[in-house]
Image (cartoon, rainbow, N blue to C red; front, side, top):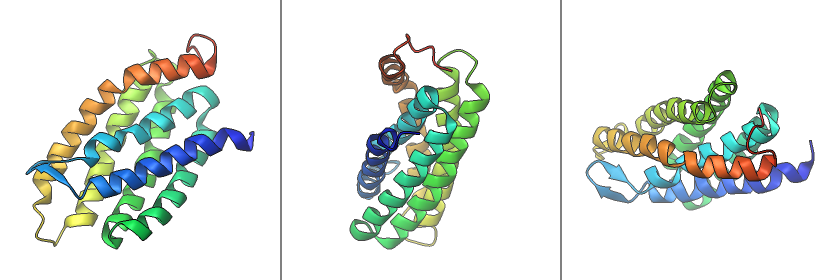
Amino acid sequence: MNPRQIILPALAMAAIVLVSNLLVQFPLNAWLTWGAFSYPVAYLVTDVCNRVTGPALARRVAWVGFAVGLAWSVLLAPWRIAAASGSAFIVSQLLDVVVFNRLRTLSWWKAPLFGSSAASVIDTAIFFSLAFAGTPVAWLPLATGDLAAKLVMALLLLLPYRALVQRLAGNGGAAR
């Protein structure tokens, strides 16, 4: 593995984590936060890495993004948000890699859609329960709304996924 292959995706991952940890603190309404729109982009990064270079790099990007994103979040977000985010992030990212790999030989859209969807369910459950359980925040409606938004984002991010894979793979996106 070329170390330069990991730098850009890992920095992107860390930035997505930080931005999402800040945005999750700002509800749009009683059932949705801004973080629901930024966080699914982390799965896009993982899935593109997985498709173009394989699961080993995708896992490394997730771990580096986790470490850097957590460090930034500890400095800039409340500790409980940072801890919940870190826990949910690494579990869901590694799940995304596994699900994606199992489905990688199917139609181009199935691995990223089902991987991101499964990971979003786990991420939402872990994050919201750790971040807000026992607080006055009405987190169950937020978790439900955020999950719905993440699932919609998983669908919408299929187009950028396809375009990025085609460009980076250099073979029409047929990288397996």
